[in-house]
Each structure stands twice: as C-alpha cells, then as structure tokens.
Image 1 (cartoon, rainbow, N blue to C red):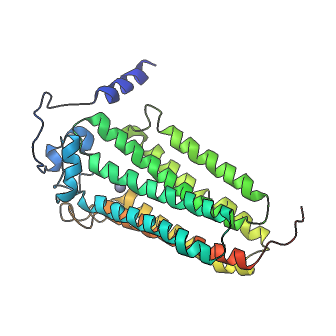
Image 2 (cartoon, rainbow, N blue to C red):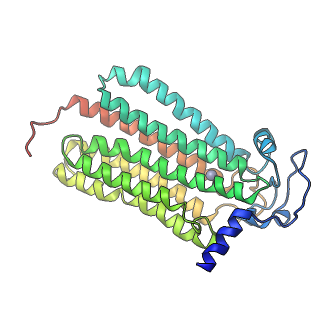
Image 3 (cartoon, helix red, strand yellow):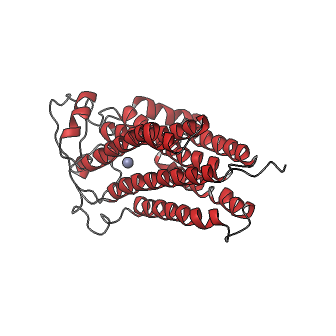
Length: 307
Ligand SMILES: [Zn+2]
C-alpha cells in the first residue's frame, strides 16, 4: 500500500525538474536530451520536440512544424473523414439501401466510436507537451481509452451483421461490451500509465483485437464452412483488416524506421506516423466492408426462425 501511495503521489504532483520555471511565451523546439523525463519516450526521434507549454500554446502548436505535426493532422483529417462518412451514410447510403432504424443505430455507434478514437488521439498529440506531467499523462490515458473505443467501433457492425439471424448476436455484443469496458476501466488503476506497465497495456489491446478470431471462427462454422457465399465474400475482407492492423502494430512496437535511421525521420516518416495512417486506413476499410455486409444482408432475408 505504501508503494502504491508513492506512485499516486508522484503522478498527482507531477515531476517538475526545472521548477520553478517561467511560462514560455512562444513555442520552442527541444532535442531529446533537453526534454523532461516524462517526455523521453523514443530516443530515435532526436529533435523537434515541444515541451513545457501551457494549454493555449499546446493548442496553437497545431500550426507549428514539430515532430508531432503529422501525428496531429493525420488523425484530425481522420476525424473529418469519419465525420463526413457519417453524414454521407445518414443522408445517402442508408436510405438508398432501405435501412431500418437498427441499421442507423449501428452505423451511428460505429462511426461515433471512430470519431472519438481520432479526437482522443489528436488531443493527446496536442497536449502531450503540456508543462504539467499530470495533464500530459491524463491525455495519454485518454489516447489509450480512444483506442479501445475505436476497437469497439469495429466490433459493433461486425458482430451485428455477421450474426444477423441468430441469438449469438446478443451473446457476442455483451461479451465485447464487457471486454471493452474492462479495458477502458483499467486505465483508472493508479499504475496503469506507469512505464513498467507499458507491456501490459500493449498486450491488452493486442488481446482485445485478437479476441475477434473467436466469433470469426464461430461465424464460419455457423455458415457451414469456407465454401459458403457470405464467408467467401467477407472472410478475405476481415483478413485484410487484420493484416492492416498487424502492420500498424508492428510499426508501433518496433519503432521502425527511426530505429535504423535515428534523427533522419524526426518530422516525417516516423513509426508513429505510419501507425496513425494505417489505423485510419483500417477503420475506413472496415467501414466500407460493413456497408457491403449490410447491403448483402438486406438482399438475403433471414430464414424462418429455427431455434
Ligand atoms: Zn498517436
């Protein structure tokens, strides 16, 4: 308990090595060695860091070229993409495919999750350089929460349309919701954001994503195996989604290519930027797949209830 209190205390008060320090009036960029300890995450990105900023300058730094510019803008554009997809679905795609109220709800939830995921990430990359360590870590926790919401947004239409005609839909929906809420709640554990728990955090998200294999295999079996039409149409698309996700994860974990070229990809081409772009690509791909599954479902009504 004593140790736990110490950790909480540390996070609560923050760590100001240069305290007391003047609030900067403009945005200056720092090298990795000049950073306060809590910002030293990736030594292969050697320069272009923002640090010590008050909230207003964090926000203003959106228009300043730093090593976070691509990270911020990639997910800001991602947010705009999913926002316009939501509008387009609502006024064009769904009415055109004779959608029911349920379809609207599923699409709204899915795209809302994607937008939340994007905005949490934008917020994190903007406020990561906040002069208070506590604020910086809060945003990091929110970035992680955003990822679990994004994964939920993938599961919702996936589960809804794959198990369209039977009660497994409810079973899996509840399981997924519980799982995501657990992951979401875990971040409130005082040690969750600590450096020692990085491995636990990363494997949690990995686990939540890989869990999708269970309903997939079940879905293939329920449809009578790999030769069935719907399986032949949509299994490859699911596999492509997992491949994009796996590629994103590999970049995230290995810190490639900056590991091989330290200092050469500080502003553009770093692993985290590739991760961002691949995440947007994956969510977009999955949204398009969901549209196709929905249209397939509407063209083939459920057989009369057997159970
Ligand atoms: Zn990010």
